[in-house]
Image (cartoon, rainbow, N blue to C red; front, side, top):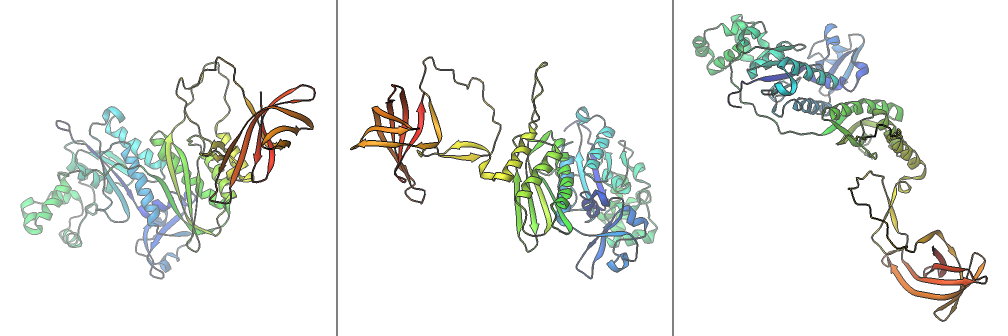
Length: 507
């Protein structure tokens, strides 16, 4: 960074508790909304939107005072939704620069604040004004109204963003004092004692504070006075402490009333999915799986995971898959809150030739499988996978997945013909004639066969430690019927059932 001018962007969102709740409740954004905190009946307003402020509602009002206003929506404060929104905003800022400092801890609890080191990003995003506009567009897509300020001084950008909470500004280097002069002194983080002192002196703006003589100010307020004056002049140095990069797709929402109907729940899930897709798309990623956790009345929880064959950002597809899964596995009580967590994956791209026929939509397979799974059960849909056992026809079902096959992995066909066995499923019963331990003949499909050659028996058994005990004896047999037709087959004796079965025919 040596020889390069410092440049910082500040992202600021006021009334953060209210914005965090309204982000997932778009139907309430046009209404007057207040957020209450505290235990009843001592609840007070901690945040509100612009519509409620126009009615005359202010922070600190009690619930009784708020109920005197007509058409006001009251929501309880949700620290979980605030944390999810804060993580989404920090993640959004991280797409413009890896050096992002979270300043929410030093600010009051009703605002979001972070600083971004954007020095050297001109070749990626263009001039600073273009970057700030793109940043605000990304934040707006997340459902949050914020302001952004760009300056070569970190603290100057913070003060300007706080003073103009709905605007975007770029402060030229050397013009920090002039840009901050008209801002109210409340944008500084003043203690009660300093705020009272400046009120007695008649200091209302940063310009008035910057005009005070430095020596006399230090003599009365100490080093804190020098620091406040440097803030007002836009000259206070700052050492940026970037946060560790983190990417975690999760959204949480606490419902206003318990929900029992699946259709009402899916309306909320759709809004949360839209936010997850916006965040994944910003990083050129897709949703590989979505896990929905429902918190129920009585303290129980209900968790379901949906994983399609390919990652996708199709919102309608995800809603349909979640609908079918929750319809097949419904929660057992009313829902109080829910969390959606997604696993990111790479976006699927298919390169087709100019004259290649149009392929069917791959996402239709997932919806079709989900509908079949709801009818026949989850254990009956998928692809069969052989299990690590010698038991005949032993397999388990796994979920369909798209695997990439490396070039040259397909084996060449053999030069010589080989025998192939056609398995009979289910195996057919046969009547066998024995002489001692030697096979003499059998009746198969109403035909009498005499055994010419028999190879075996090969005995196999297993699972003696549980109730699924099994044991079989297998012969490979060459036999002829009365008209001279030859039959090559595999005969099996099931020891548990004491029955002879025709397992397969050799071609």
